[in-house]
Amino acid sequence: MKRTGMLAFVFFVFILFVISGCKKSESGKIVLRCAYWGDVKEIKIINNSVNRFKKENPEIDVKLERLPSGDPYIEKMLTQIAGGTPPDVMFVEEARFAPFAERGVFLSLNKFIEKEKFPINDYYKELVNAFTIDGNIYVLPRDIAPICVVYYNKNLFDEEGIKYPVDDWTWNDLLEKAKRLTKVKSKGIKIFGFADDWPLWDAFVLSNGGRYVDNPKNPARCLLDSKKAIEAIKFRRDLIYKYKVMPSPSNLSAMGGVGAGDLFMQGKVAMFYSGIWKTPIFRDIRKFKWDAVMFPRGPGGKRGFPMSGSGYAILKTTKYPEDAWKLVKFLAGEKGQIELAETGLAQPAIIKIAKSPHFIDNKPPVSKKFLLKAVKYGVFPPATSSWIEALNMYILPGLDKVWTGEKEPEEILPEIVKEVNKRFFKKSRSGRDKNKNRVCCTD
Image (cartoon, rainbow, N blue to C red; front, side, top):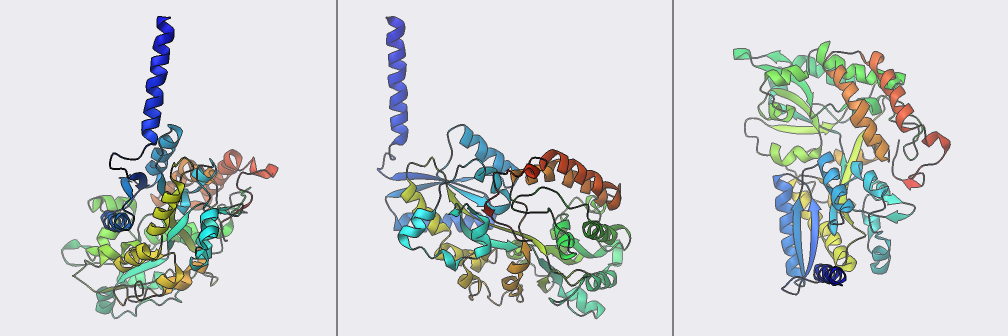
């Protein structure tokens, strides 16, 4: 009897705990948890947006939870989901959408969009499609990011009498300019002609006509061992070791372990390849004038570079889906995107804002209008979590040996691809894949 009574008491306490967790806050407000990641500029933007949202929706409180970006963000979110403590709303990057989509943790936004006749067609269709599975939209886009921006130091070009790059330039143009701009200045300070934010090999492969996989929607085979891909990887490697116009990993370590972006800001890199998100930081540069240009065409005249983008999703477990939708459409709506655009941090996902003076603002980089046409050349990564695993386990570690000079591309890429196809895409060849109906990638 005592044991039965104790179990009943424990069960009663548990029920009270669950019920209390379902209630609103003590102030009577609905509380929404929102997980996100971002740098100092993004923290300020989202805080401003949330404060405005709370003023317009006084019945709702929002608890922001900032987490590390990249793989740690995925791990933390999946841990919370598995533990039954996920947020109501979360920030989602397209490249890391698959691990969540495959688990079916997001709420479809279709019913909200249809009910309100929400203007989803105002958003870049490429990114909307990237967040769509079987006709269901799971993420409302906030920004789109064709990773195609080559920043350049105008002062260094002027000193050497070199013409600035233009959007129709080629790999050969990049190499010729990088050779002329690479030199040792006074006191042994070396100026590199070119550098990228991290090993951005994708752009070389894609602009040379290479591809990640055979079918981005339902990959059965990795294609990074193709002739075009190997040529592209070799060209990037040659920029480091043959032409010596680009810092090697050991060069960066010898320079204090700073990033290539820091070297650009210090005037030690003439051309720097990254995304538009570097703009707010670079606008603090006072030592020299700078601008930007689209990543060059490959030898065959083709354009191509990796594409990214992000937005907000609602978790299926939320107790307040209607209120969560209010928050999502506010953060990824016009007001939030206008504020984002004016910082220069990201290209808005709403086309008319991307084309407006809020983004095309005549501030550095003044030539960034090229981003508007760059979207059609961007390539989203394969739409499966298997691709993320393949990158982390085989592709990136293998390519690191190329960038350090340990291996030749033609030597290691066939080995990498063989393992990737054996371990990750064997099942896809059977014709069954969780994402076979996903409309998400262009190639």
